[in-house]
Image (cartoon, rainbow, N blue to C red; front, side):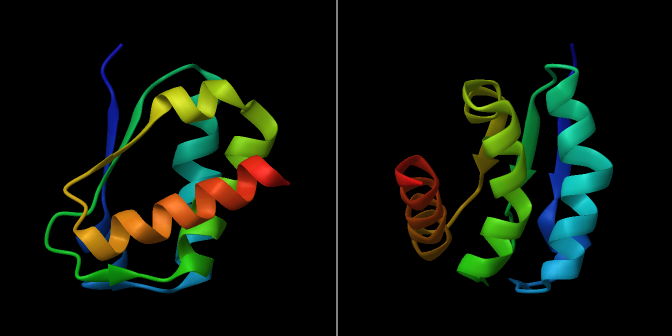
Length: 97
């Protein structure tokens, strides 16, 4: 199955902070794809940063609902160090809760 790619720069701009935008992507793209066991590539090319609340809004529900299926099928690409740190923080929090 061909993965679905979300270009975060096109969807949310150079700094991903709009939780409503994250919710829309989660509801309309991520959850349906994960439920069909498709890979979702979340591409952060050209994005300078992202808030913890944005990443949480984007990923928490699919991870809670689908567990390992979401962990295995959500792929983050072209993340700078700051974005990767935020993703790691959110993932650690979700694993603890």
